[in-house]
Image (cartoon, rainbow, N blue to C red; front, side, top):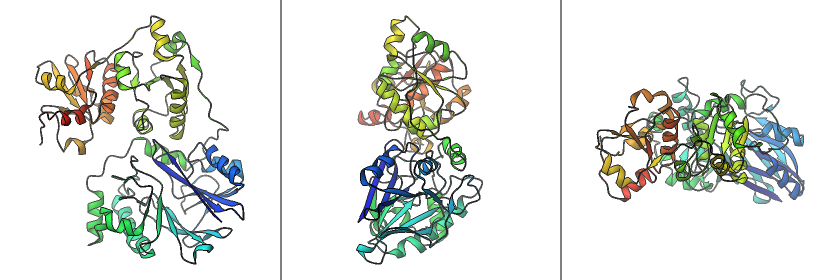
Length: 463
């Protein structure tokens, strides 16, 4: 009997799959995340042997768990044909079949997102001789398609062309009834704007996926797809390089050591140390360790940690609880940020009880921001992406995307009060913490930011 399990990883918005046959007691895992215990536990519960670990492509969004899972289970690692891989795996070609009892997976070469990308047609003998589903990897999502621009180096149009042929010549002819299972959901930067559904059909995507509507010509498809493509997250290039080599295997993920305020302060004094406060933006504004950057532990934490933190520098954490710290460590581990030196025991409470210095941020409502935005000693700073700003901004606001703020501090006047805003206040708090760390003494964040500004009906500048 067919066994089919999906595993959604929040934050990353990544989906992996276990598929197999209960009678033959054999299974394959497709695109596993780095912390692999979830697959081992499922296989144990179902009485399955994991025979294959399949990589649909060389991942850029997360550290792959394929090598680790294969080492723990003896499974064979399967991947598309590429000279970039520097670890032991079986390269497969279009049309090859992986047998899993009455279930089988047939390889389909599906370049476009990456050159080596493979998709997997799912067959079940109990449901006829035709494929019943397609694992699309990062090629086709609900209401979106995979990005062809992540490799850079001028390969965008070539990959977009290959994506066009994969979608229109290979996928859609399979028929509208075919279920599709993609590997990212809404919130992932693997597409422009991925939809909410984790499962769809080719028929549904033919009707409602706007990218598939642009079929008048290959050139029109390419132009539409590449237009207004958001900037790739900074850590994607690093992870892509990591995933082609031998990845360090951890038997289990352990909590970093708790540190006393004095020990924490001593380590935080190292200029190379990254102090990350994962508390809410309001808690951070009320008082934080000087020099800390605020990346609040919300659903978008792992994405912004990838953008703002460096794998070459160690990390210290400040959180509300050990549970929050462990969750943060797990998410950092998934994107290859492993050098966590410790966390502040009992959080900011122990710090303040030890009479150690606290730094603070002003926190303005949107009404305060509107009332003060024209004052000569106030500079309003919009830290949203260029695509967001194009749809309107606070009148008179200066724009620096938060991911480039550290390199453009010279564009700001340190003698003015810098009031930051973004879509909700989350990225604005990251930006404000960067400014404080850089020595800007008078900084304000705007909780609610653009969402609250619009809700209040305040003036908007468009240009």
